[in-house]
Amino acid sequence: MKRVRIGNGCGFWGDNLDAPLRLAIVGRPDYLTLEYLAELTMSILAVQKAKDPRVGFATDFIDVLGRLAPIFSHLPKLKIVTNAGGMNPYACAAAARDVLKKAGQPEKPIAVVSGDDLMPRLDELIAAGHEFNHLDSGAPLSSIRGKVVSANAYLGAKPIVDALKLGADIVITGRVADASLTVGPAAFEFGWGFGETDLDRIAAATVAGHLIECGAQVTGGLWINADDSLRLGNVGYPLADIVEDGTFSITKPAGTGGAVNIETVSEQLLYEVADPAKYYTPDVVADFTTVKLKETEPDMVAVTGGTANGITDTYKVSIAYRDGFMAAGTLVIAGPHAVEKARQSAAVFLERLRRAGFTFAASHVEILGAGATAQGILKADHDPPEVVLRIAMRDPSRASIERFTKEFAPLVTAGFAGTTGYTTGRPPIREVFAYWPALIAKSAVTPVVSLV
Amino acid sequence: MKLPLSSIAHGRSGDKGNHANVAVIAYTELGYEWLKDKLTAEVVATYFAPLGASRVERFEAANVRGFNFMLYDALAGGASGSLRTDTQGKTLAVTLLRMPIEVPADPEALVRPGERGT
Image 1 (cartoon, rainbow over the protein chains, first blue to last red):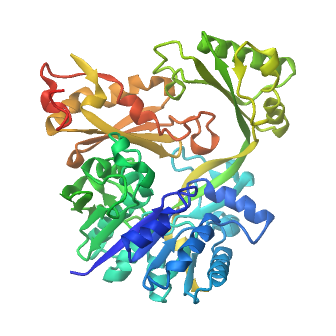
Image 2 (image 1 turned 60 degrees about the vertical axis):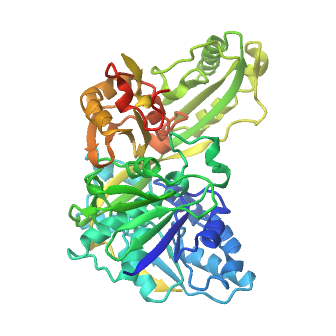
Image 3 (image 1 turned 30 degrees about the horizontal axis):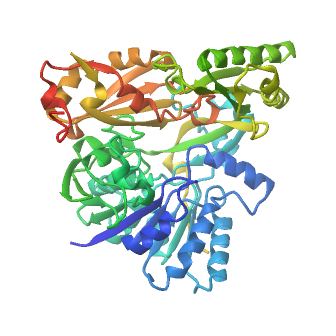
């Protein structure tokens, strides 16, 4: 039976820059997928693009492509599928072409998948009766319409198949569901359709895509039982060897660190999933509860039995809107009684802001080292030598947040003995983009595929 | 007798918008059956009460001996708006695995194969 090897060399924007090259050389995938977009990345890219029409995509991809360029002559069949296009896939494609040219590489056919950006059509769509109600609360979009900065439908694998049919070696997309980056190449190679006939196979490939989309998270990263012997410093990124019938194996390049076993795969199978019997993507509703895992070789897990649980007639839409400003700063407080001193330092800090006449929409104090990530659940069982006091504030007023960031330094002299750690300057102020998930009828969205 | 949940299960957690998911995977079939009764949505909701979740729902994935807990509205705004260090609930799995849980008088058959008798 025909098979295809799909690797993932990047699980998020910020992932290791050398991983894609190492995976391509040692793992020899037919397709290298690179995933860059988190829920709110699009809003940040939208704001960037509004300031400069040449940006608004995941610039790390251009760096990665420059590193990959020298090996393309040795791996002429390697194809790349990435959602690095973000809010500006055409500008991303132009930058990709430039970096290949600079590397002295022959031109590679590049295709762009767009049509996910609903922002230019938002009011027209609302007028046509698309409500974009909040997926959880049901609240109407009109309550935040004026503050919306981006609205993107999660496209599926079909436009990626179309791009590959056009002969593209590099496919650059905007907002496409993460798993679809894997489903696309598999469906193209095996001639799968997106109707009922091949739906179980599309679901199986969705499981594969879900397992590899976070890079090293399936090869030993975050594994509960990871230790030094795992050599995570040289962790191998994942490969999915998919067979025409939809069965596949997850593995990693020989000689790399990390591990692929039933524990790493089952942890990732349930990662960021709600109902495992209904994993919604634009391509299929996949049932993860029918999946069977089997260790077939060291660092290889065979995955069978992924099935479809229907298909929806909607795309998920990720909407982001401006929601004020925030900042978070830290100070180190040394003991004895560091926890109590940190608590008192926070009280001093907050009193000074109050005396200065500032109030905030939301504030949060954490004492890191004393159970802050599980506040009220776990606490330090001894008197730690030092703790980190972290104070965060959010408010609609940028000026208030700015004033807040100026209150850390005074504590170094006017606080308690043993206060230090203020060497990084005032904490940066970040605009908050809140997340508004919604649905839209598939019929209202037209994916656009073009060779550029 | 009580042991930390980590002695009979592993797991992973993450975010779905403002909701957190915490997957708990039993090391053995017996452990999975045991946790079906012991690690209910109510038990997890009580343990995580300080997070302020609006509701906790448990899903079963018997094929991997897994339970997936959805902690709705537990992330204080989630990746964008939360003021917490752990905006995305990444630490919730290791925190839950520290929970003491009642085990049978002879828990050997529930612990991770390869780590028995230690």
